[in-house]
Image (cartoon, rainbow, N blue to C red; front, side, top):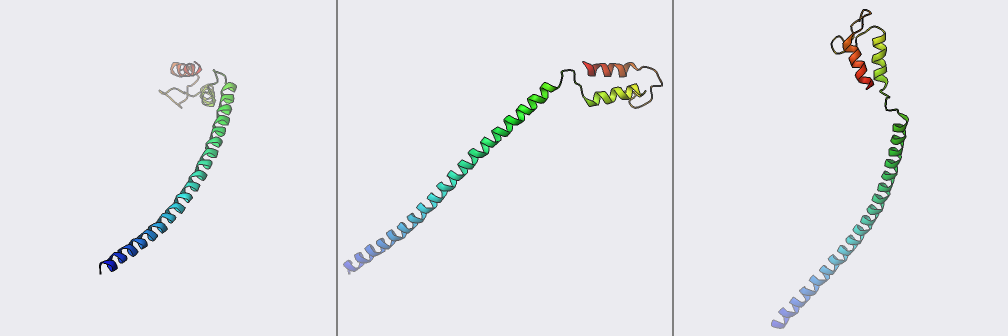
Length: 118
């Protein structure tokens, strides 16, 4: 009876080894797929980083060119609009903004417009 029990144990152990071998094969296939996907993602990441660096360098060169085009005294369209409103006879200061100057100069407006020039 002992021999029969021992033989059953060996056969059961063999079945367990076969099942483990199948699991190990499946695990190897899974690892191979993951390594392929990892490599593909690394390649794509590299291409995206290269493209991003190209775009950033192009953007930086365009911005640098725009900065060179602007003079240091180039205040902008907003200042021009305020100066035009002042010349048309309206206040541009915070005290009386938008009201008519009635032909008189306003020290607040002039001070504000002169700050913009500096």
